[in-house]
Image (cartoon, rainbow, N blue to C red; front, top):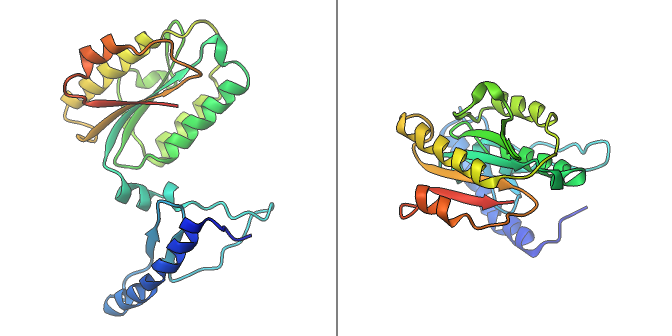
Length: 218
């Protein structure tokens, strides 16, 4: 089945001119093995071309935006703390969706990024307790390790987001002062079914007026 999204169809047409560029590049430098162009819309071009084989459901699910070469070219290095609400209101499908959301976020991180994942209710629960209070490189091994630990999360109690935000800001600040990490952008990503406050006091304490860390709600 062909995608009929006008933005993608138009992009496929205008990017056809890249075919000649790829061929010319290879003529000048035969050591080039692969050449890629990835679009923010999800389509991409590859030289030399290959035939794609669909999975057992007849679907080709490849997305260039999840590939390391695209991520590193499209984004700046970043330090990310992912906060996951595991209070009682997150039981059932909501927690399942939260875990999948975290897994999808990990797909968008590359080797230049650093991260940690903290689950919270009345207390803080580091997804990997051995990495309490620090960040780790978002390489394939670390991301898969954290994914395995996501299955251990369960929902109960009351969500104390203020405690989690304080911890996240402290981690980002301490890690930045060590000279490690991305030495670039910082972000706090919040996975929850709803925040009951804006927590302006916490952001005023840690983030304003410099606005060093961004908060993203999911």
